[in-house]
Amino acid sequence: MKRKYIYKAFVALTISVAGLGGFTACTEADSDLVTFTENNKLDMPNDTVYSILGIVNKLQKIADRTVLLGELRGDLTSLTDHATLDLQAIANFTADASNPYNNARDYYAIIQNCNYFLANADTNLVKQGRRIFEKEYAVVKTYRAWTYLQLAINYGSVPFYTEPLLAEKDAQPSRFPFYTVEQVADYFISDLAPYVDTEFPSYGAIGGLNSRLFYLPVRVVLGDLCLWAGRYREAAKYYHDFLTKQGSIHPTYVNSIGWTSFEFTDILDIYASQFNANNFETLSVIPMEASEYDGIVSRLTDVFNSTTKNNYYYQATHSAAYDELSRRQQYALIYTDPVTLLPDTVYASDTIHYESDIQRGDLRLYSIYKLRNQPTANTAQSALRQTCQKYRLSGNDEYLQYVSLYRVQQVYLRYAEALNRAGFPQSAFAVLKYGLWKDNIEKYISEAERSEAGELISFNQYTFHRGNTMGTHSRGSGNAEADSTYVIPQLASKADSILFVEDRICDEMALETAAEGQRFPDLMRLAMHRNDPTFLAAKVAGRNGAANIDTELYNRLSDKKNWYLPLE
Image (cartoon, rainbow, N blue to C red; front, side, top):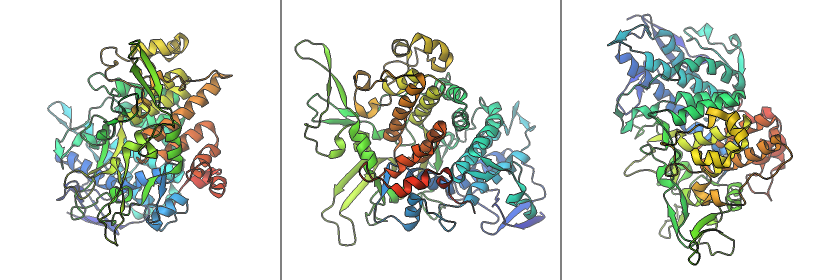
């Protein structure tokens, strides 16, 4: 077979096939040369699985980076003295072209693979009455849209193209328009919309994971694109329809951590158990290799946990700002009065004796971060050891088996964000405080707002109910529905109510998704909604606590252009 070799210029394109180790793909050329064949049509059924796994292999290179860029630049995580210089540069917004977490080429390698597949897949090929590539075509379109979105979030304005580059002369950034995140979002909303109901392919279990978890939910990605584009009602519709789709519903369920009695002496934790790929909560992951021999492994566990590889010196932990936010939450508990036999609400107070300071307020921080002393540690090891439950290893695993991209609560919070900005603050706040099911919708949302929101807050009463639906805030702050302090106050205007609820959503995003890499993009998006860069600047500059504001960082981030990595 004749081959043409092209020097890697602007991007790296490698069309991959399934390889030996787990998900790793073998490539014809992996460094400076890329390979093309003259007969490049994808027209065999096996081309589908090979192409999808080849793209998944490329996604592995940005998996850890997606979390670290999103988390370390936010306000919820602080680095320890043992963090690498590269991680410190990310957190300090000083990363340059030499930083391994700043490499736009890795995103373009994914985009190139997607462009190649979409240009060459024979969409007319039919077997047993079905177009063979139809499902994979939708999957690849979604990968491409999501990757471009991450690229624009991290770099601000990026070269944009949707055709495969097959010659060195084609791979010049100056040939392409530069798209902002809003432009990227607008383009891919139209590009993805026709595939919203296309089913995912199924290849069974691969590497111990259900292969359906490898795909990005089309409606959720469309919701994200609409949020970034400022098309709020459309975003709410996509999120709502994903959550309520007949035959594939996604209630919140009731995983939580809470005090078990009004004496506030014992805690029951069923919250942290949801952070695994086999839980209903997980929607989409990037599968990683089990060993370095097989290929790309995740090192997030070594960043957030004490492990043998880092001599138990963890590199990242919860910030002072996260601690303060968690403590500010009022924990409410409904109990039955032993005299009147009527339900009553009690509140945790500062007079309670807490075994740990992070038991004050919302308990999700306490559930996720565990710290212990190991007195038998030798002089080369840390005696103070941390476990972050979101990145804990399972069984005999040496490395994290996957990096989570989407989970159910994240979708609910973005749904609330979209509802609020669409003009429905009562509905958005109900997502946080009560959970949306028929009785709560009728009781806590005004008739006028229900009428205007219409199908955006329609939930089947038989599939969404008290037994499987709760307000997100109750996952760590007790019976939020009974908390008389957790309310929308009387404000001068609806616009004021929207800003108030958005602040509560921002806090809830922190309490629920801390350490997952969502925070900096969330702050960016909320600041863009408000057209106020200082909203993000104040949050990030305050990561060390209210008494330790970093004024230099505040001033720098008040200019939006300083939010982004240098594109070189």
